[in-house]
Amino acid sequence: MARLVGAFAASHGPLIIRGWEGIAPDRRQRLAAAYRSLGRRLAALRPDVLIVVSPDHWVNFFISNLPSVCLGIGETHDGPPEPFMKDFPHKPLLGHPALARHILETALAADFDPAISHHLTLDHGFCIPLWRMELDRLPALIPMIVNDLEPPMPSIKRCFAWGKLLAKAISSYPEKIRVAVFATGGLSHSIGEPTMGAIDEAFDRDCIKAFQNGAEGPITALLDERMEAAGNGTHEVRNWVIAHAAAGSRGFDLIDYRNMPEVYVGCGWASWSAN
Ligand SMILES: [Fe+2]
Image 1: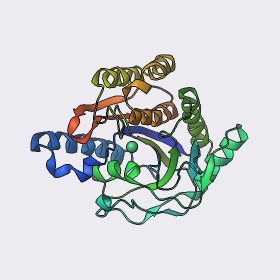
Image 2: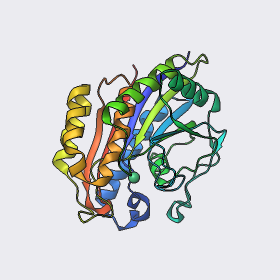
Image 3: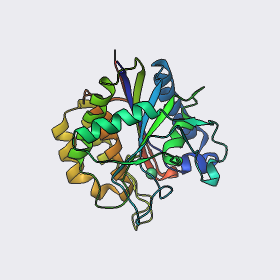
């Protein structure tokens, strides 16, 4: 049987690549160190497959066709199309169609109805953390795109349910492989609205505390009450909920948190490892 060996979360603001040289060296170093630390933890678990939960920033989908959740079940995925991502070091990006299809079938049997794609393009949301983590090699990737961008979005309750569904699908997959789940996005940020650049550090720290404690009720209450006011980009914390719930809501270990106005994002890095 497959085994869930870890769950991870990290921020992905475009300026973490595009504005890298403009960040003061000491702050840049701490940012780099947090991603590296996450990368080391992930590499140590030797996952064969990484399920990456990210929004799609209008690359595969638009308001004319906007799934709440889309699973990437293809053999391969395209790398990031953004010009500032042109030096992304990993290619090709292999998928894992067999596990992806098993997740899909498990979902449909449990009355979840995700969209599917046989070929996705993985934008900066997926690829910035994978790049900054400085991994020698990438596991096979199963992309799970969640609509964190355009209301109405999946509820926090539904995100918990999705996480549990992923756990069930992984544990019932017959092949003996190691699987990790990786959420990208958040924490608080505001893009293209009057509060652009605002970071709600109090929200971010409360959020991290709630994920460390793990309990579903307080996380749901916090996000339902305060996520909307913490900036439109903050909705990406939904992905953290999915990864956290996939790991049985047993509590994320905080690697670091940085209020980074230079990249417009309250940056957080967190992980959970099976013993
Ligand atoms: Fe984003």
